[in-house]
Length: 221
Image 1 (cartoon, rainbow, N blue to C red):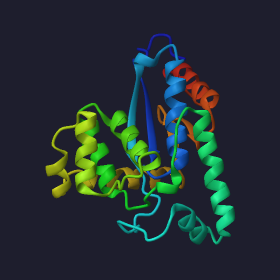
Image 2 (image 1 turned 45 degrees about the vertical axis):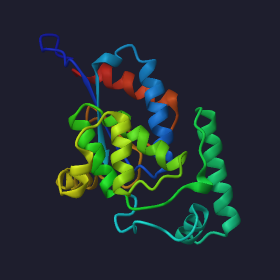
Image 3 (image 1 turned 30 degrees about the vertical axis):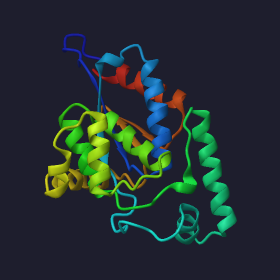
Image 4 (image 1 turned 180 degrees about the vertical axis):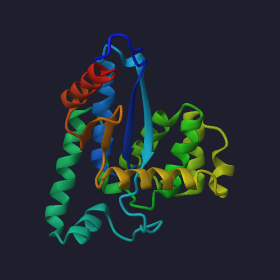
């Protein structure tokens, strides 16, 4: 460490996620629990980045989430149901009440645009959490323009209805996805602390807290 160099004032955490990704929601909760336990939480800047699990996903699917999972990975329906039940149980351990039987798989491009708008207003985290909850707990269609505008209003985000009708933040979403590709991010959640410490997946609160502490120690190295 250079003892004569100025110490960086903040930790940046870039988090790539998709609003219909169960492990992204788990990782979101784990990270924020870790952040609550981090001594320097006020020095952390979180930047939520867009990642579409399926950029070609239609706005609505005819079947259930279990059926979609079974078809995507060539699984028996019973196996897909069990996998979804297992991840819902993991969510319950974090205090989340999921109703995956009512989830409505969809295209998430506009939802990511909404998070980008919210981030400009300092509400990116709350907006992302509300979208997660809308999909996993409320059975809402998170590509529907009216629904997105209502969720934005609930979260205190302004200008959502007009944004969704236009093309604002489309480039922001694409730029996030290009950055992910350049960094070799192929799955989410992907968390990068100070562009150095990398955590892939919902590995648990302890791992998230350790990454925060490592990033703090390494911030001025």
